[in-house]
Image (cartoon, rainbow, N blue to C red; front, side):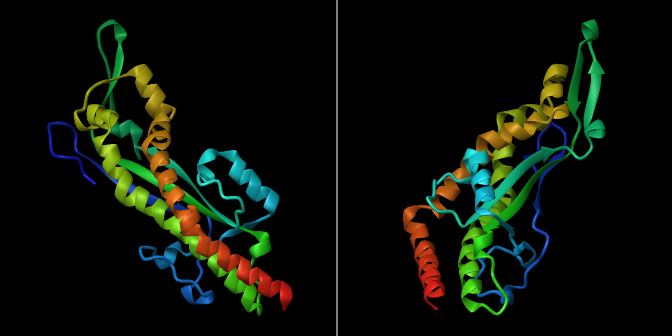
Amino acid sequence: MSPPAGKGPAFKIKSRIAHTNTVIVPRSRYPIKPPKGLSANDLRLPKFVRREDMMKLLSGTQKNNPAKLASVHGLVTAELAVSFPDIDKQWQRSTGAQNRVSWRFVGGDLVLEATIAVHVLDDDRPLDKDGLSQKLFAVIWEHELLHVLDDIEIIRDWLPGQVQQDEWTRRYLVDGQELPDPTFDHYIRKNNLTSWFRDGPWLGERNRRADIRDSAANYAHVSDAINDIRAKMTNR
C-alpha cells in the first residue's frame, strides 16, 4: 500500500505472513472445510502441546484468550513486527546547531509482518486409522483456521490502512519531518515502533475478532461437536 502522493518521500507499506508451523497439510488429509481466504500454504499442521503447556500459553499474555473460554482445545498465537528493511539507507542523519543530531526518512518500504503459530492439545492429536480422532481434530483445527484467517486479513487488509493514517506515520514518513535523535533511538534503533502499532491498533483489532469467533453463540457448535465425538470415542 502506497500513501497518498505528496511532497514527502516515496514509500510503500508491505505485509508479510510467516508461519512457525512447518508441515503443510493437503486439504484432503482430514475432513475439514478451510475458510475462504486461506491458501494451501496456510494449512499447516499445528504444534501439539500438553495441557499444562497450553495453560502457560494462555496465561502468558491477555491477548491469547480474550474471550476467556473455559475449555481450550486449540490456540492461535501471533506476533507483530514493524520494520524498515534497510535503516541505514532509509534514514538520513544530519547535525545541526550545537551538534544537535536528527534523522529524516528518505523513502523505501515499511514492512508489517505477522508470525502465526497454531497449537492443539496433544489429547486431540489425530491417530492413524482412527476416524473419530481425526474427525475430532478436524473440528478443532477448522475453528483455529478461522483465527489464522483473521490474523492474515488484519496484517494484509486492515492494518496497513491504520498505519498509513497514524499520526507518527504521517508526521515522519508521509511529511518527512525531522526525527530528533533520542526519538529515533527509541522508535527505530530499539524497535519501539513495533510496540506502538502492536499495543495500539493491531492488538485491539485482534482481540475484537477473537471475541467474535469465540463468543458463546459462535463457539457453541464447535463445543457440541467436540463433546459428541468424545462421547462416541468413550462408548465405542
